[in-house]
Image (cartoon, rainbow, N blue to C red; front, side, top):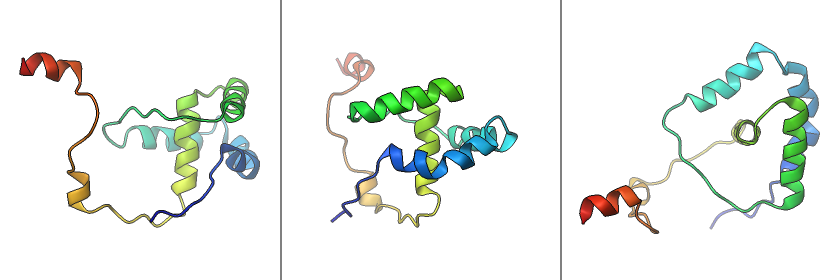
Length: 110
């Protein structure tokens, strides 16, 4: 059973704002984002998010010159930074995906 933790973007903004703004424009800041983005192939993710958090993210991104993608990647990087993460079993990783098949596969299979 997964732990029930309420993670909000607000907590990262309040605790890490001074740290992030201190390195804003710095090579370290850009290197962190580049390392997270260049770590391999990426996956598009869609999820529901409370409107007030989205507005905070848009406001923050506007004034800091960051995209929403960069903000989310940086926030997740900071969130997982001090966590010990155990890998899923191979059986779970290889489980068949549910949902619609991509259009390219549908045309190929017909």
